[in-house]
Length: 128
Image (tube, rainbow, N blue to C red):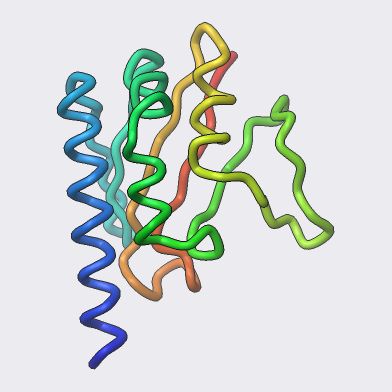
């Protein structure tokens, strides 16, 4: 029961932070994937850059430890993976890398507790 309460609290806090960030920047596109057990927001380049430059990545990291986050890196990413495929970069580093490209953006997903192993937050980089 405690795990369920903690998971629900984390999901609510991260969701609130991401919603506030997206609302402040403009209005990211909602991405629902109920079959995957997650919901997310697709941010534009400007929204990605604004999120990277603001306080939200630090706030999210205070609530969600890095080992509970996943990253889908662009094939041209300069962020390194370890021998097990793990990404050891901060949320801000992933956001900044995408924002550094003229058409770079991210999609950020909140995972329902237990649907993606220990992860509760996934971020995917996109650019051409």
